[in-house]
Image (cartoon, rainbow, N blue to C red; front, side, top):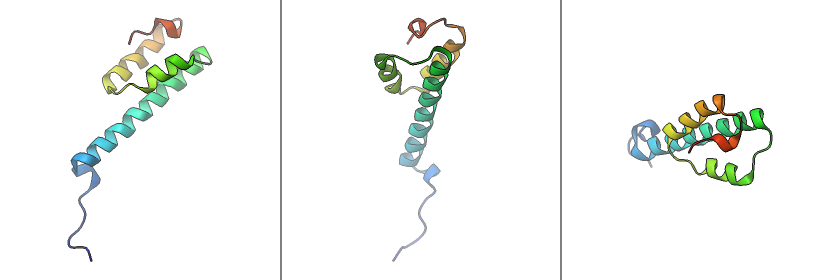
Length: 77
């Protein structure tokens, strides 16, 4: 028997953290897709490095870099 309603996920610390993790993972997928679209298959080392990013700001910075770099090696992490 439940006593009261559960709080909205967006209003809990854990919920906010889960939402942020989901957004970060989505941005990582977007970054990888954009790089592969522009440069073709990526080296596994680069894919791993990108997959381990945790800062949304850093991912956004890299997304913008993709526009101007001539190869994935020119990305500045």
